[in-house]
Image 1 (tube, rainbow, N blue to C red):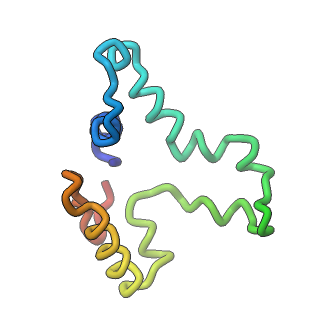
Image 2: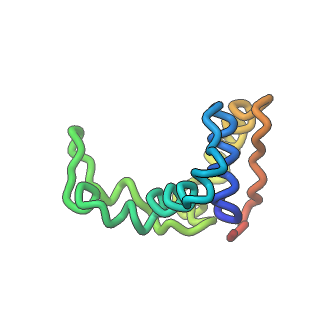
Image 3: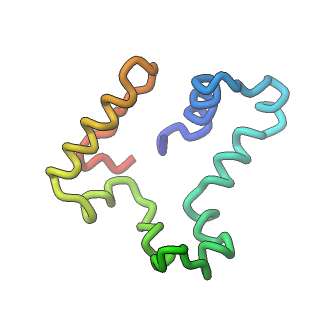
Length: 106
């Protein structure tokens, strides 16, 4: 996703059977979605700066550094292995793959 965000947003739309039209791509709709979903943009949404969940969870709980590989500071190797298995099972047959490697920074 980090290497080719616009292409992956297009692939996701195709998978959901809602592909972007050539006009939407030319008008920058895909790039706008990538921008709106960026970690910097989400961090600056007012609700994310001041909001508190109904469960009284601090807003900081929803954001990490937003850097590839930072997961290893928050998950044990066992947790990562279990999550990898869950993702592989969920993606099986979808045409999507999970290509990130441990320590991958891109």
